[in-house]
Length: 97
Image 1: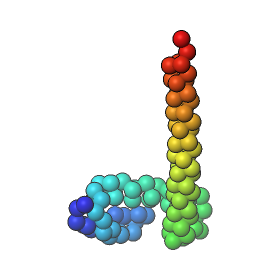
Image 2 (image 1 turned 30 degrees about the vertical axis):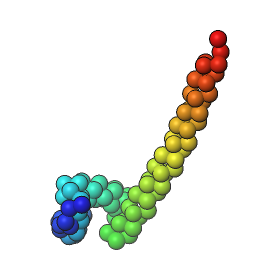
Image 3 (image 1 turned 60 degrees about the vertical axis):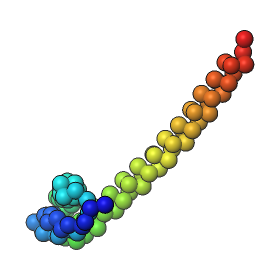
Image 4 (image 1 turned 135 degrees about the vertical axis):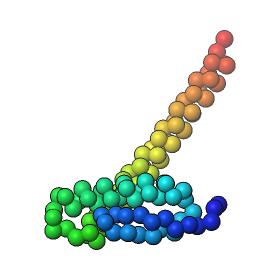
């Protein structure tokens, strides 16, 4: 693990210093993604403040994350079912003449 470094990012014109051990380019990529979401929210309603848009963006990202976790879990379960089916087929072929 590398030592933490400070990465400056700009979201909707506001500067933030992020202390991280992640690759600075990765952190900047994430900030650009966050800015895109915040700006899309603010474009839909000009009265939405930056803070409110940021909170809504966080909920959007958390929801997306939870949905992806669920999909990964379901895919893992499907892989287990397929493995069990393959094992059954292989054991059946070994028994058959």
